[in-house]
Image (cartoon, rainbow, N blue to C red; front, side, top):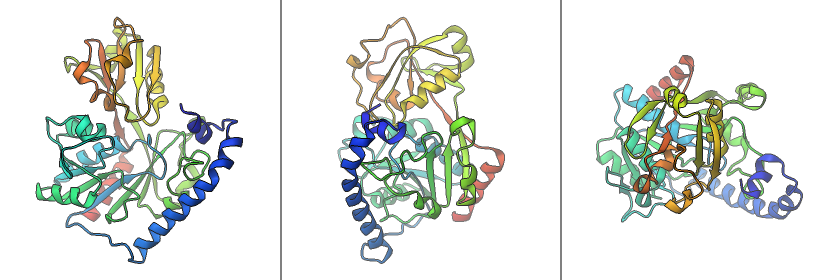
Length: 343
């Protein structure tokens, strides 16, 4: 974990030096972002309503909150309601030949970014990437999509939304509560009250639900991430997680996501003994040299997001762990009702 993240989330002693230095920059960030919001609110900056409903899945802080599993869940949920979803994404880190770019089965993470490739491969859904989310949405509507799911884009006010979901890490919550760069927040916690639903990913401290008393302040749900199988990068074979653990009680592990420790904790909770683990920055572009420290005789586990960038040089003993967002039946119905209302 980078030093600044330790300051944001772990109350590192370096906060006494870094936070005072960064607070003036945070004040400037607040001023500029506030002026931008007001510009859209009063019509000085123009928004554009597309012809189909838009669901935005975003967060008020930096990455690693669990947006992608929610996007996948919404793709499956909207399909079950008879809708044809499409997903738009910024495509962070990608270098597509043109924008908006429609992801296909031959697209790579180098072109489209890791998350769009993951979503397209997992769901076989239309995915368009580009910084102009309106152009991406229009492209998907032209492809026959009748509901648009925006992966991130909470602060992209140029695109109005019919349903807004804010995802919050149930353990890290809001860190020190400060705006970037002194803290991890893009917008203050006041923003949660303006959302249709706040979804807490995982449990908070002491095993308690992260939402708790916050339910009285704004509508909120609680989701869990469920892992049931592992997939081999080299052969595409899928094995039940319990069966895998029976044969391989010890593994190596890597994670290049916003909150790598969550992945390592998932492995530990599932009774896997991690011999060697290594974290990388979110959206890291992997090369074979990144894996030199690992013993090829020990299975190597990674996230599904990392796997899409490692298929070109993977080894026979490399596996990834897909996860699925799960809700209680009551909360599933709340989401269904919200989608039905806007569609």
